Image (cartoon, rainbow, N blue to C red; front, side, top):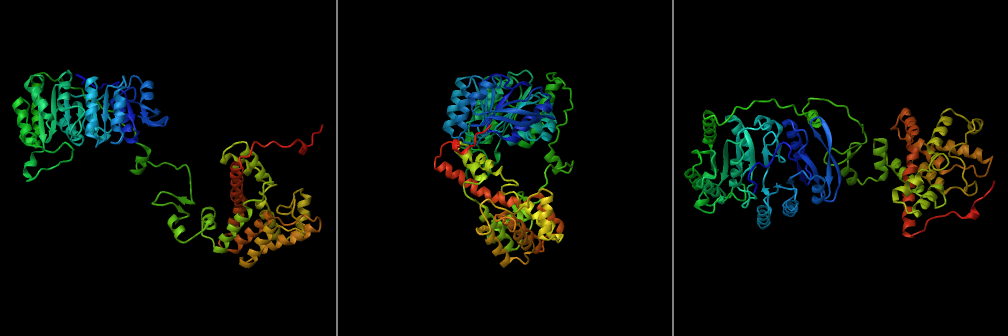
Length: 608
């Protein structure tokens, strides 16, 4: 066990099992104390590496994250404190691993419920190697104005109120972390404040004892008096009694053992801590208080009188000239996090993203205001989800059914079309699913699957202006523009596209109006008079029918219809649908374990 000071203004720690709030509180305390360097040198998250962004005052810093204790200790040889926020299941193993590192001198174990046998092994190893274990079941410790462990002393407001941003003259040790916060406040009210405070933890076998720390405090010149807060159960306080009797402590010790109320109960009472359970008269609070008093400690008559006892002891030291006055300093203002400032109404900040289609802030995600559970309970389908996320409203069933038909009919068109070919070649090159999918999607455009929007735009303009098919087609020809939605490489007058026929049949049976589709059909009649393959293709069918869906539903204004066509909603249908097929081709090639594709020479015209 160390015999003097554990921490200083240059102490740095390694934090195991990252928790954002405790680490940020440590860094805020550093800034409050005027430290030049952060007290957290590195974070250990088993299996992961990188950096964690946190604040050191106004400055945002990146703290290294290491995958193992060994790697962290090697990277930060000056960090000699290991703060272990692991669960009780792994706290012992990770603490032992830390103790075995030559650079680690102090290990703080926050977890409760660490098996007692494991704790005993840790204690034995630490004592044999002159190292310090604080905990288990501890909040940690603090050296005022220098260093603190995790959540010790609570919020910044509490730290400022307790004047822990600068050193005082009192050494404090207790079993309870919660009572430590209370006592820091008490000590600050009646003395010049805390120099060092330790909560050893409430387990039956603490890694270090009350007397261990009192003996340390006795060797620290800046500490002029000590305050001890024990509790019923166990015999830890008796080691302090022996130290006092043997004259090992030559500074005033004010002590109180909580739990005197236990005698009011007829049966044995288990208080909050595992060790707070009296196993006999010697372990009672009354017996311990009496023993401490007999050994020379200053023991008040009750907990309520503890503050007065501390005050009187401190004032006596001042009168004797053993305590020098401390110059008060004004701590810097800790910048408030934006999130908390917004929540408290102190500031307002612009948002960076606007979303109107979904909301995931409640108990369940909502699509256009419709809860996910409602979508499932109503038996809605993919078309309904698209209507909510794309059009921000629930479309009639015939509309969502049409959307689903479009997706089914456009999901795939064989391995020879450009999109599928690209995907197949990419998959056979050993690329992953996303890469293979994207390589196929990138071929979608005016010549392949991307003409739906253009077909809708041109058919709508011509129909709304009452152009005859002749005027429309010949006008496009003069502009040098092919009529989108007309023409096919394979299909013809005598070999119609079955997909187009299915879409037209559904629309005629379910749509209130098919004005735009009928116009497209008249255009097809004219173009077929020019060439046998200038048929209405699936792009033209979907484009014209979607215009009928939007206009005939009575839900969309003319401005909204124009915007839907302009933005690219209709091409989105083809992209969504064809993704299904492209994914299928990727899986097919990988399942068949097809080799790298090389295009055959005989299929290439080599020329000058």
